[in-house]
Amino acid sequence: MNIYDFKVLNQNGEEVSLEEYRGKVLLIVNTATKCGFTPQYEALEAMYEELKDKGFEILDFPCNQFLHQAPGSDEDINSFCKLKYNTKFTRFKKIEVKGDNADPLYKWLICQNEKRKPVSIKWNFTKFLINKNGEVVARFGPMVKPLKFMDDVIAELNK
Image 1 (cartoon, rainbow, N blue to C red):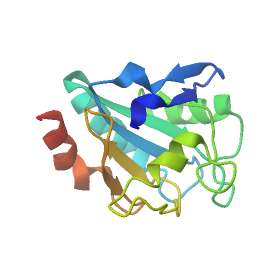
Image 2 (image 1 turned 45 degrees about the horizontal axis):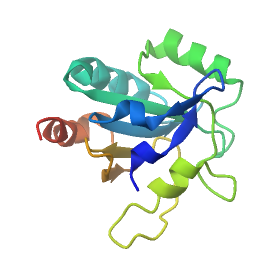
Image 3 (image 1 turned 120 degrees about the vertical axis):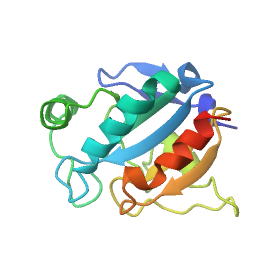
């Protein structure tokens, strides 16, 4: 199983197959608009702008599970991100990333480690780096700013 086996919902609630991203390097992030890490949107957008033409995509999944820091509708969240941070990368429908109602994509992502056992999402802005084969190659916690792993992204793009 890899990332391409999953379907997610876009901002309009329409199903999107992650197969559309085959052959690209992906960064999957659970985000929130009212979080201390929200300013990472600026660095994420800068990374996206620099690398998008080389086959890099950021997939943004808003999540309201951590102290309700992603309030509002999907439309509200999208407007905020575009107006405040000028984000252009793909944002999907708000989801849950932990617990019984976690999205299937996240249930899979949290098990992609050496032990193949779930390592739960602890907070907003947890980031998963996916290689061109649809496999998780790295996980970065909320405190790890995007510029700290830019070399990892570039290395995957160059493979």
